Length: 91
Image (cartoon, rainbow, N blue to C red; front, side, top):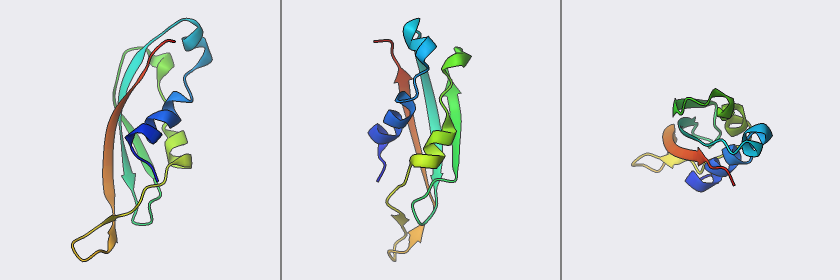
């Protein structure tokens, strides 16, 4: 199930080749909503650097990510929210 490192890895695995070749850097913050079954129906880029060609693709998070469901006080699965920041850094 996903954690911050795994979600960042999904984005970083999509570092645009042209950006890597030109050693462009970018930082972005994203938020996801996880359903009670752990799937991710929604991802939002909350903040980003000005380098638009580095924008990560939230559709990859929605397609790939799966969380352990959050639970309420009675142990029932519930909706949850997750936020993180990741960076594209030129090698």
